[in-house]
Amino acid sequence: MVERVGCANGETGEVLPPTIAEGPDEILVRFTVESLGEGDFTCPGNDRVPYDVELSEPIGDRALVDGTCRAIDLTPGNCFLDGLLWSADRGVISEEAEE
Image 1 (tube, helix red, strand yellow):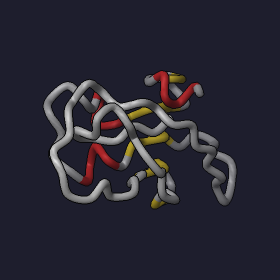
Image 2 (cartoon, rainbow, N blue to C red):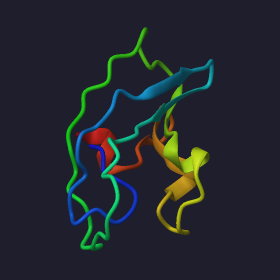
Image 3 (cartoon, rainbow, N blue to C red):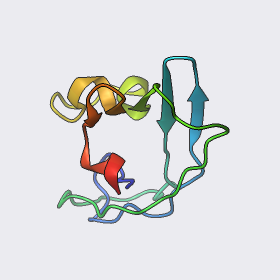
Image 4 (cartoon, helix red, strand yellow):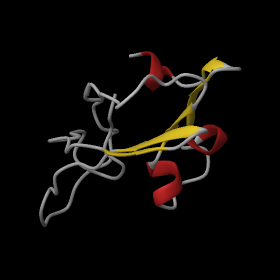
């Protein structure tokens, strides 16, 4: 599930293809969304948009990490465990990884 970071009148908008960095210990997935353009936007919380990600090989024992948590400075508390969504030893950390 992808949710726009920032005020957007409650709409995430068009999700763009993610940037995926697959390493030996983790897989970093970072999403961006189409620009809203100029204007003032309210902050009621944005909708969550489903997006399927295909990897070049199985996850295996590598951790799955939300790359946005490492790419921009988010409000404290928005990135639990530095963006960790799933790991072989802990299982699902975030509900976004389940869906």
